[in-house]
Length: 124
Image 1 (cartoon, rainbow, N blue to C red):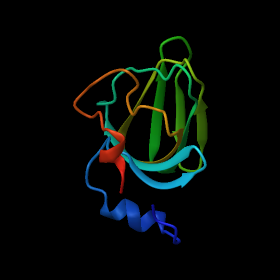
Image 2: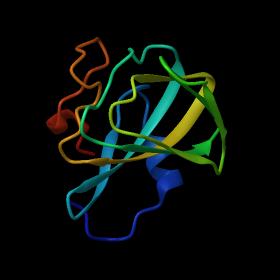
Image 3: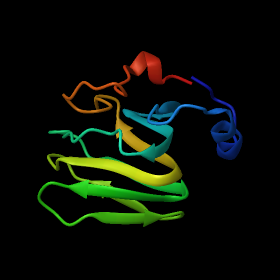
Image 4: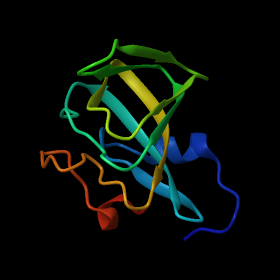
């Protein structure tokens, strides 16, 4: 894993695929990931035992929940999805995200879809 300083904006400029998170750092038992989102390809999913933090770097993000009101995030805003909350993320225009997740968190929970990535596929 990269132990030198990194420029997040430069890393985003090299990312071409949507819904394909990339691990840029490890902090104890947590991954710091970057992802670009555009459209509605993220399936409804749940992380039974892990929280997930979404921080919008650029653009806007819609977080939808089966049992709660949706949350709209703009650049500079963050939101913690609590463990056990079924959710999905989408964006009409390109959105740049930083995700902070436990290493045990599966990208799309137990749901397998065309965007599901293994941890090996998420390494930058």
